[in-house]
Length: 138
Image 1 (cartoon, rainbow, N blue to C red):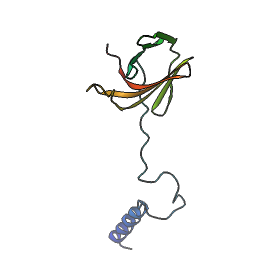
Image 2: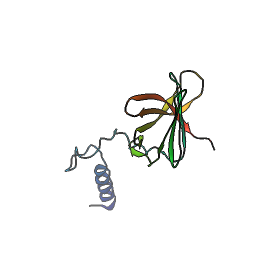
Image 3: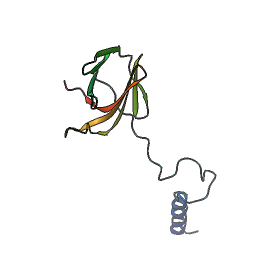
Image 4: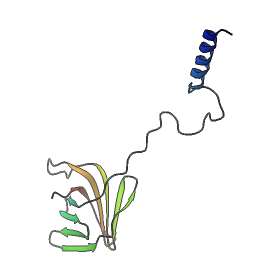
């Protein structure tokens, strides 16, 4: 076989090996080509401020505590044992105070302020509140 013909044959075989539709033992295995890539885990480090309306409430998450405040009902403080992060959700369990944050655009429904997280708070298993959160400003 002439050297040029051999080079053409080897190049064709090499290209055929790169064909994603070529049948081989791994066909059908693994993720499909159009499968979404795993999203990076959300960052829940640092302090957060949370707020909600109807009824009005606010909350601060700091390195050492969870402070939940309600108008005319006083404050409730729990220790911050750190969040449990699963996928794009973080949950803090301060005993009777449980908080969940998810990174997604959120509106408080009363202002034009943009929030980066939605918030869900449950106090003593009964007082459930939904609202929004942002990272605390320094």
